[in-house]
Length: 256
Picture 1 (cartoon, helix red, strand yellow):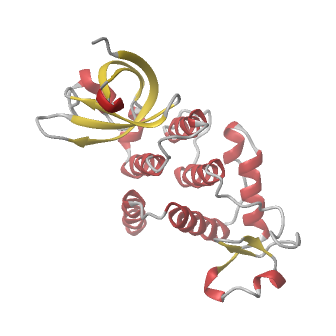
Picture 2 (cartoon, rainbow, N blue to C red):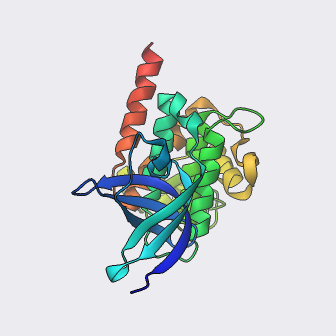
């Protein structure tokens, strides 16, 4: 029986070991979104199997087997972002991006957009831009862009109920003004300011590296960082292990 061969371009998010030294590779692809590819050749140390390393961006050749199972037949590694492995915090942020991307549904209309956001974020995180960008800024921009792409980011221009200036973020109702927020329990409301609104709108309306070029105070940044982390986990109904690792590394770095 002749098996159908398919070419897929994607980033390796993570691998799952099966029995008999076989692996399932979770890959975010431009053509099919998130897929799982079965292989017996994967290795975390062999350079000939670099396609199976986290962050590796490859062109995969797979065959379609029984019940649609994708089986690895070959690949060409196009990039594996080696710079990310030089710093534990940077590497953990990259792993965080991959963990978030693993939440992409398996059947979506715009898989290439999700892959583009991940690819561009890893590129910038690798320090390949003309001017270095703070990794925590890259992390924040990725979170906002992913929320927008997934349809979770509410309109930050005005209150979702009356179109006045928003001062609260409600994770179910969107951004709210002072008056409209009064109908909701206080513990469901997250205070925001004009700087946070401006930052969100700047990221969503800018292209390329301009997304990362914004001015925000340390206090407002910390507020927005906490909100995007909590909101993303709330909407995706999960707790990201790599986010907890990242926070631990940041705390350790600040105590040295």
